[in-house]
Amino acid sequence: MLPLSPTWQIVLGLFFLCFSYYLLHKLIVYLKNIFRPFKKGQKYWCRVNAVSDGDTLTCYRFNIRRSETKLRFAYIDAPESSQSYGKESQRLVQSMVKNKMVRVKITDIDRYGRCVGVVYRYRKNINEEMVKRGAAWVYEEYIQDKKHLNYLLNLQNKAKKQKKGLWKSSRPVRPSIYRKQSK
Image 1 (tube, helix red, strand yellow):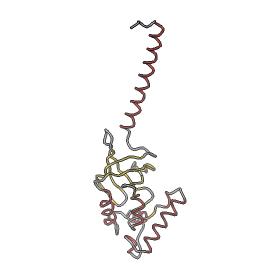
Image 2 (cartoon, rainbow, N blue to C red):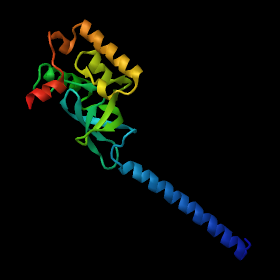
Image 3 (cartoon, rainbow, N blue to C red):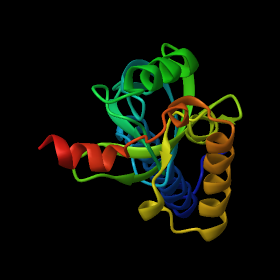
Image 4 (cartoon, one colour):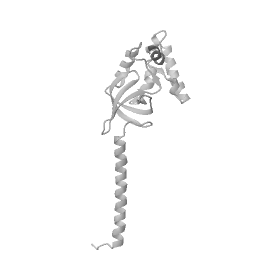
């Protein structure tokens, strides 16, 4: 094999330097994504290990850090645990997602630092399922998309007509009103 001229050695050295820099950059970006906790607008797979009430759960993200986070369901408000139908709502969420793999789409971070998101088990939207089964109210104030709001309100009205879940009661109290009364 013929020895390379100094010019070609410099060119090859620069090429390998650029290639090494590119690989190092890709590795750093990949590692940052692995170690990053839950972030708004992203979708994650996680395992639900606890259900606090009908609209709050704790899950572990599958990354190296095994990030644990409290997650609040987006667009719905379930009865508090101490409220009428609160325990039933909590049991319904447990039966659907506890100790199971779910996909979470983070929509926001609330004032308590909890992630707010839409929870999917297989292709089923658990947030919508809670409204459909009469286990939660639609949180109208937080829904920007009018089509989505109308869809959820239709699910809620259907559950009301069929007297499902909390709608069996003659006058169910919204959790937001219940929280104000409890103070």
